[in-house]
Length: 640
Image (cartoon, rainbow, N blue to C red; front, top):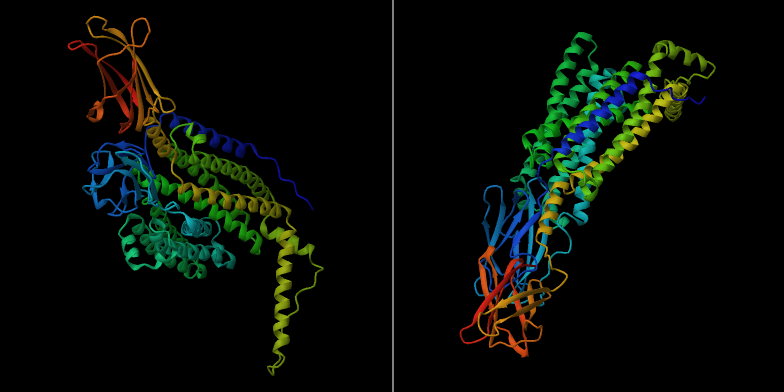
């Protein structure tokens, strides 16, 4: 018999529509009023800048980050052209107010050439970040410096850490959602083996994943070598960090969760007195909520929610978000296991879970919108950044999950329209009355033929299981519910994977801030030479004319300079002296004098003119037409 899903009832349709409208309205209001924030630290500036050519060796190299970072003496390394360290390995804290800035001092007397700066840090949201750039002293040169080609947090260790992170989320969902399903929806489930395996499996998975993350933390944020997972000194250092403290706290809370599970499936499952069981249900619900909230807080206190905009609000919101996800998806998984593995479940339990799932989705939507605002901020970031694109995928998966859940709600409502469970069960049993009953097992009195007795016991168990399955499959409404719940669980697995990747991705706000910083340091004339033309008048006889100056390629580093003089008629004009000077007032650099060589009539040139750093440079040209007649003309030009 093929069952057709009943039409969506008006109240359910209205509830779903209201939820979607509220979500869209909140999203629009929050994104419209977004203000800057950051998470997942990124390098936003350096001194010297990437690619800069400086005239003399700086006293130190400084790096500016988008948020707080954890560094040590080896976090910033400056390598000379031969690949040797040129810094003193002394970390200098240059932070001031909201500016996060650190540096290292350079050794005195270092030679000219190209230097490589390799840096590595741990951001305030627990993620490792790294990078490298170069600058030159005097003039660029070849360099033998080698920096790690693999980004920190990548490789095999990064893959294993990502798997452990996913397993930790999955274990939390099963542990929390399964226990909530038993206490809030189906108390009899505490005695059902498949339900017990879901909850215990969640606890075991989360515990194993947390231990793995604790061991992998050293190579994940450091060398990337798997063998360093058993470095005791590294483990000791991890325990002193915020992520390490969060993982240890999670293990302690999992110890409390183990006690909770043992009571739930031990004393609680065996309790027969309804009054006592009701009191124990209340106590377990309070204790379980506290433990679940504590486990969720170990993520909130150490990752994205703990840094950036409004952390005092973001952390409790993140806890609510995780609890809503676990209640919904964990309860969904438990229901799926019950529908496929357990003899049966009361319709009232399915209806209770349906209502709880609806409110979980409502909380999930509200907290998710707030989190999206914090990490994205603008509409353009949704499509222009990897974080925004992943977030759109997550939203699409949630929409599919909600749509599938609406079908499940219809099957659940149809279940409630039928007869009582006892009457239906009797009807189904009657339909299968002609089937043979399992053969009773008897063991001979003399203790012989035990092999035959074991075989008969296995046959009896198999026949009983097959009979229960036929009875379950004979209920079309239950079969339809099983299919839709299975579809929901499949989407939920993918959703959890996307969420895990999302927590490891640089938030859109930070990515756009870095892009803006890079754009601000780009040169207006980066793809063409500087070409200026200025009139001059020295005040003497034949003192008027035009000076034309070309700086090629018009970037930091070495440039070719050409100066041309013309009289008012446009013909080449000679002068006793022509000088050029470059001044960067914003950095108090200069004037840097250049005396070009006279090439031919009206033409002077100089090679290897060094522009040490990008900025708004003032180019001054001095023309002397006689012993006493002289003038200087200048113009500001942005040079990169």
